[in-house]
Length: 353
Image (tube, rainbow, N blue to C red; front, side, top):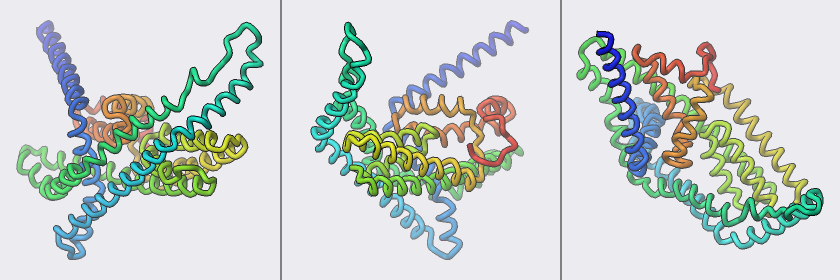
C-alpha cells in the first residue's frame, strides 16, 4: 500500500511538472495573444471602481465604458506617440552619438593605457561597448513595447468585455459552486482584486509622478529625448529596484556622451538619484497601504522568468502576476504552504516593500 502511495505521489508530481512545462511553452509562443489579455485584465481591475462610481452617480453604464475606453486609448496613443517619435529621433542621430561615444571611449582608453605598462595589449573600450550594440539592444526592447501598443485594439476589446462581465462574476461563482465554497471563492476574488487594485493605483500614480519629475529634471539639464526618458522612467518603475536603477543610469549615460562634461553628469546623476529615491523610498511606502509581501528571491526569479518569457513587457507585468499567484495559493489549504514560502516573512507589517 505504501509503495502504491509513493507511485501515486510520483505520478502526481510528474504530471504537475509536465503541466508547468506545457503552460510555459504556451505562454512563450502565444505571448502576442496573451500579453494584451493580461494587460487588459489589470486595466479592468484598475478601472472597475471608476465605472461603478459613475453608475452610482446616475451615469449610464454604456457612457461609463466609453469614458474608460477613451481614457485608455488616449493613454496608449500618447505612450506610442512619444515612444515612436523618440525612437525615430534617436535612430536619426545615431551617427552623431556614435562619433561622440567613440571620442569619449578613446579618451577613457588614453587614461587607462598608461597604467597598464609596456608589454600589455592596448586597452580599447570599443572591444567592450559600441554604439551599434547599444542601438541594437534599445531597438529590440523598444520594438517589443511598440508591438504591444500596436495591438491596442485587442487590449481595448478585451478590456470592454472584462468590464461588461465583471459585475456578473460573483453571481456566476455562487451559482456554479453551491457546496458551501461559493462565499469563500467570492471572498478570494474580492481580496485578490482589492490588493492588486490598490497596488496598481498607487504604483501607477507614483510612476506618473516619477516620469514627470524625471522629464522636468532632464529638460532643465538640456538632455536630449527628455520626454522619451520620462516615459521610460514611468514604465520601468513597475520593475522593483532594477527599474529605478535603469531609469537613472540610461539618461545619465546619454548626457555624458552628449556633453562629455563629467562634472555636469555627476550633478545630473545626484539629482535624478535623489528625486527617484525620495519618490520611490519615502513617499510611495507612506501611501501604499497594502502589502504584497513578496520574498526578494521570488521577485528576482519572477523578473528573470517573465523577462525571458516576454521581454521588458514581461518584467513590467511580473510583480502583479506573481502577487496574483501568491494570493491564490494562500487561499487554499493544500497550496497555502507554497503561498507562505513566496512571502517575505513580514506578515505583520502593513506597508509595501
